[in-house]
Image (cartoon, rainbow, N blue to C red; front, side, top):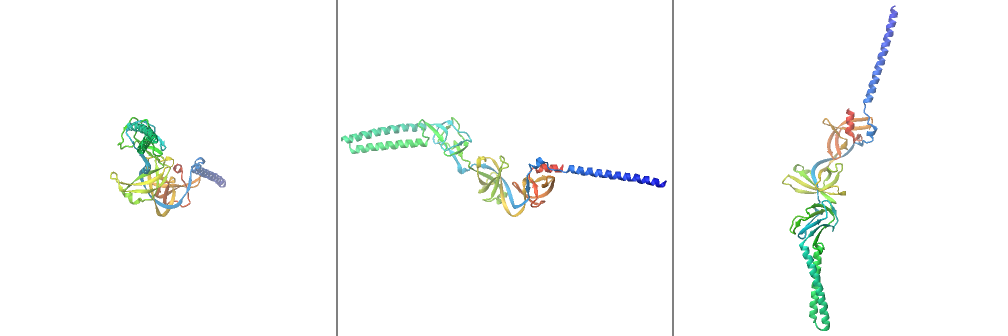
Length: 369
């Protein structure tokens, strides 16, 4: 009887032990499956958009950023002043228009031009009279009725009349060449109308100190930057600079400091520096605000990554080290300096590590969720 009870107990124990084993195996399988589901994998649609870059070493660059603005190249602007007094009747251009050299900008009704026209008529009449007088005197000389002296005087009068007519024609040409009393204001160079102070029916005088128009070709422009006293020792003639604007945040204009104004502005206590830039496609407009980053190379190297790969969270910088779409690690890094689109690191990654350089914040959030 005891043996039978013992066999039944052993059988029940084996069944219970088997059930526990099955339950434990199922639980582990569920946990493994759950862990696999929680592991983040970059979706294929996102994987096509991300940019993968490589950690490199580069010469360390120290930089300071200055504020400034785009300005006209003062050597390439031409103010147009009135050459006579009168009343502006017909303005043919607007601010910002491109004009060609010799193009008419405005018409001025002028009493002075009317006087030049009257001088032209008088000079032409005097020339005709002098010519007839010369012809008559020569005929009389041929007939013995006039002396050689009379012929000489007639020739002198004729030459003086021709000279007077030439002078009047030159004056008219300088003043627009119009004989109807109208003065045409013409563009002396090709370029853009960058300033306009003329309006229709405005009365002007020759002693007016304000130009009617200002023209600039804008093929190159100046960028004037402000240097505070604490940074003066860090800025040198010939330093390379990177210039960015609000209008083109992703565009970096390269240039060099070519002029340092070695005086401080008494109002805001800054020193001005100048950068001359070629203005392709007229992208840079005068009075645009600009950030000017002055770059100084140092005699040492450091790890370098694109600035777009950097993530800042909880007072710490991170990058995403990429091995595959299913293997992306969050790695803390130590930042030395950021200059434009380059960031220099003191550690955290190694040369040759592949990192995600776009959509990094989106993937970082997904890995932490």
